[in-house]
Amino acid sequence: MPSPLNDAALDQLFREARTYNAFLDKPVTTEQLHQIWDLMKMGPTSANQLPARIVWCTTPEAKERLAGHASDGNKDKIRHAPVCAILAMDIDFHEHLPWLFPHTDAKSWFDGDEEGRKVSAFRNSTLQGAYMILAARAVGLGCGPMSGFDNDALDKDFFADQPKWKSNFICTIGYGDEESVYERSPRPDFDTFNVIL
Amino acid sequence: MPSPLNDAALDQLFREARTYNAFLDKPVTTEQLHQIWDLMKMGPTSANQLPARIVWCTTPEAKERLAGHASDGNKDKIRHAPVCAILAMDIDFHEHLPWLFPHTDAKSWFDGDEEGRKVSAFRNSTLQGAYMILAARAVGLGCGPMSGFDNDALDKDFFADQPKWKSNFICTIGYGDEESVYERSPRPDFDTFNVIL
Image 1 (tube, one colour):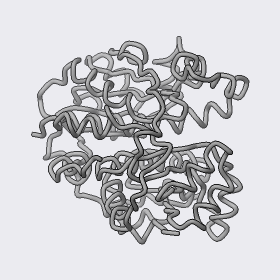
Image 2 (image 1 turned 180 degrees about the horizontal axis):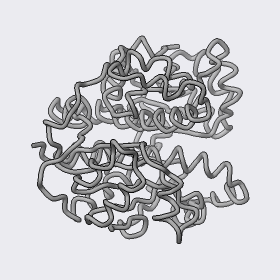
Image 3 (image 1 turned 90 degrees about the vertical axis):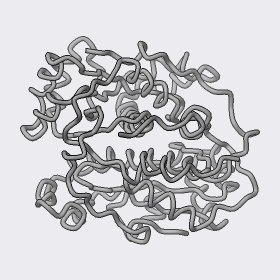
């Protein structure tokens, strides 16, 4: 039976981890991107849908192209980060269910129901986005997740050949610069947003 | 600078963790629910929105009431779990932003834009749901997240007094019974769903 993780691990994942607005001048390797994927892909999604699709922008050209779709306050964060991930979702994720969820015909649950697929892709790719953030922290990296960008413009630019891929959020990744962190915003007590029945 | 977590921690959070369909006959304490919240609340949400609202169903009566809204295959999983969490979202989360994000007037970004709030509440409460799953694993518990229930019926029953609270997903929590785990579904290689630019 598992025990609680030690305090250092809980601090690294949750309690001391922060959102970084800038990163140290130290590269993130392709191997680290694989490590993040190999952890995050293990997290649960409904019927193993795994609808997330990730474009890891690592070159100055890719980051500049992405920054062009971001809000003014986010452009430089993207340009100067070692990596910026586009966490997208495939609305046609169900086409992969015959091999991702092989023991039953889960594809048929979603055939012809694009509205239902949009909801499911949004929920499950977002779960995967959170797994990505915590996986990056687990391998010693820091994150700067952002929603401030033009989703439609990004999709037209990056996913012209994949019209069923839709951006969800973007996230800078690197070795966090502690100087770039804002003051911690308040976190509510249990009783504020929780009910026990 | 943080180092990667050790293999035992990565196994417990991601690699060896599984979705449980049943749990050992060992209670989950109120203190453990507080521990989960105190970890998950530290995870990042856009503008510190923290839109998740959680109803922890712990009594036979609460679990039976919840099971009444679940698909047939999920009813017994809920009834027999030590706890089943209803992970909901508050569409009017922006009313709390003056104290949750005090350094700017973030509430004004969302005033009058209920459609935008629905998207933001869905994305950010789902991130919090993933933090909840990984926080539960981090404190030594196991989870069984589920989407198979009637959201509207659940909301009418549980949130009659909170019409802006909407259920997102539900999740059983306890000490996982390894006998209840299905065969692991396939997980794709990096190149299947990732692109490096």
